[in-house]
Image (cartoon, rainbow, N blue to C red; front, side, top):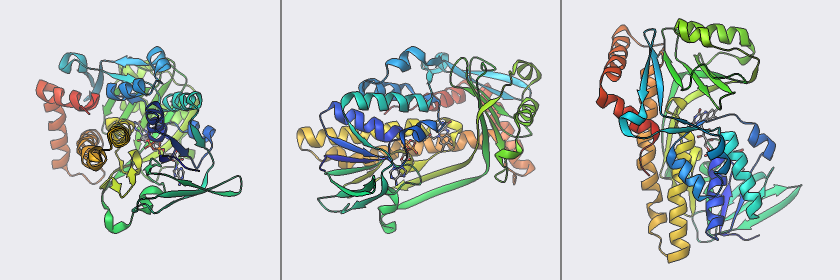
Length: 389
Ligand SMILES: Cc1cc2nc3c(=O)[nH]c(=O)nc-3n(C[C@H](O)[C@H](O)[C@H](O)COP(=O)(O)OP(=O)(O)OC[C@H]3O[C@@H](n4cnc5c(N)ncnc54)[C@H](O)[C@@H]3O)c2cc1C
């Protein structure tokens, strides 16, 4: 098989890139290790920047998003038993959109099918060849048969544990990493959210987040030890712990119900530089990870896609390499700002087991300053809704 761009991974970054390229008449094949059902069963992000929505508009897959998503003009930060509103609209005139990553993926899959794009699910043993030469190739096994795709470029959209970054020689990459000493225990429940907007909770017992996917579906998180096991957390125990971290009024509005998903996610910051090696480009989680506190993972994947899409279009339309040569620099400039924001939100709101009395007082002063300074609130708002592409 021959295509212009071989895309590894059918997560949001791979499918979005594929769709945008198809719209420009640039051929591509997406290879995904899992089945389509498995990809759709993963419950992940839900807060979408308007820049990401504009990209989904450009890809022609945002019809349902515009009908079903919720617009949030702000968030709340609960601290010292009080909820404080951060009004994005008033502070910076912008908002965020609530729409699940699963739904975005579903829309992208439908768009790709309608456009006649080729996606190979359950592609086993995907391997990249000749990635530093002029004729890269991807091999894989499907239905027990070895297959090969010749291409001009490879987009490694295969997430943190994918094969693309692993194929780049270690000496060509510099990796930066911070692993946090806690995780998030999350549940999804078909009950209305406790409030109209997300509530980020800083509490002595640990961080909590009351989030949502729609007016009928809530997503709750609790900071937990890395040793915790999902099996040890009955729904009752989860709600009891969550209520203990909320102020009494919010706790009274909590509607508990049978969880439809329950999982523990470790928190990590990670960046691999550069995001290009020869004719292979790393995109989204394949190149970087953020702790979910800043709601940036999916949105960063989308901004990488934007820069790579522009570079590829310039290459094929104008024969210029400038966009591709600049891809890593442009993407990383935005990635590091989101890394900084996600790290700062995580540091501000969580309880760190090793923190001293001094650290705790500084954290408290940080929160008090944030909630009383319009400049600090505007800075949070500007980063949360998404920095310009
Ligand atoms: C548990 C969890 C919770 C999260 N919650 C949030 C959140 O609340 N907010 C937020 O903004 N972000 C969140 N994120 C991050 C967000 O979901 C990711 O940033 C986003 O999915 C990145 O998209 P991606 O397409 O780059 O990678 P992925 O979504 O990881 O997609 C990569 C795809 O590549 C496939 N793949 C992997 N290896 C191979 C291979 N060898 N061959 C072929 N295919 C392969 C995978 O199966 C997968 O489908 C969360 C992530 C996790 C893991």
